[in-house]
Length: 119
View 1 (cartoon, helix red, strand yellow):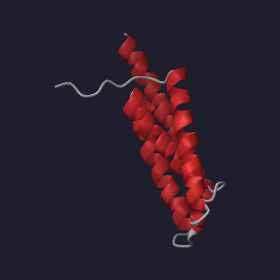
View 2 (cartoon, rainbow, N blue to C red):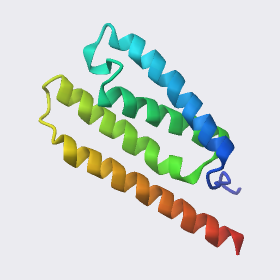
View 3 (cartoon, rainbow, N blue to C red):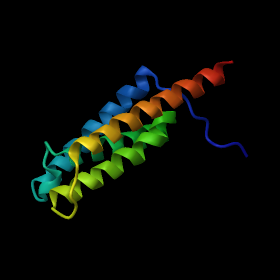
View 4 (spheres, rainbow, N blue to C red):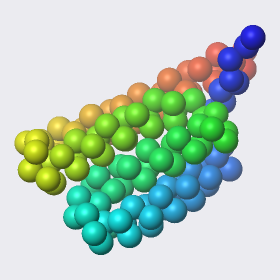
């Protein structure tokens, strides 16, 4: 049995990710009215929403980079939430740098993988 077919990003997949992320951000922001680590402007809320968008995009469009960025965003969201609760000391710049580098690496791998698949 062959595994799920993965593909590269398309404008439709990016729009789907954005819509799913926006809906997740809205729901999480409502929860943030009662639990402050998820307030609408918190880094944890944005990262959780982006991670949820990636999970949704993976299931619908099989965008390769989403298989890598979803766990990255979700773990970073947990780290920021723990920092907001004073349970963990967080170097904000370092975490954002890791998220940026991880996201760039995921897209580079997707580009490379898609290029190989076209040959």
